[in-house]
Amino acid sequence: QVQLVESGGGLVQAGGSLRLSCAASRITFSNYAMGWFRQAPGKEREFVAGISRSGGSTDYRDSVKGRFTISRDNAKNTVYLQMNSLKPEDTAVYYCAAQRTSSSNVLPQTYDYWGQGTQVTVSS
Image (cartoon, rainbow, N blue to C red; front, side, top):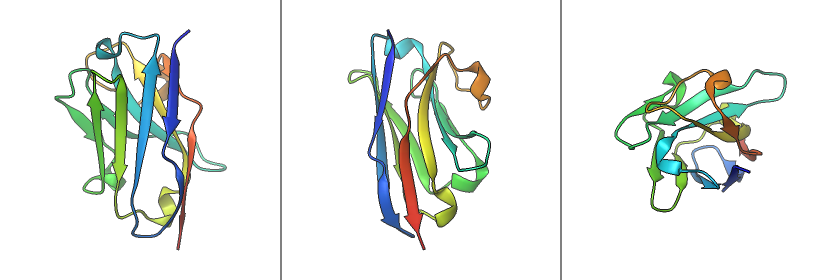
C-alpha cells in the first residue's frame, strides 16, 4: 500500500519559514510527478506547487511565487516545500500528492495518492 507521510508543519509567526517534507514508500517515486495542496477551514483544496518526476519543471500558484520552493530527492523518495515569508493567509492543512505522469497538474482529482496532511498555522 502506497504511503505518503508529511512532516514539518507547525506554528510560526508571520514572516517566518517552514520546510515541509513528504516521504513516499511502496512507490516507484521517480515515476510520479508530485504536488503540494492546501485546504483551509471552509475552503476547497487548492494547488500550491508541483514538480515533474525528474524535478526539472516546477509550477506554483501565483500567491506563493517567490516565497515557496518545491524540490525533490528521488534517491530519498522525498518531496519538499520550503516556505518563506509566511503570511496568515497561508494557514491551512498542507497535503502532498502523487500522480503517475511526467508533469504535475493543478487539479486535485488527477492525483492518485495523498498524504494525511500537516497543519501549518501562521500567526499575525
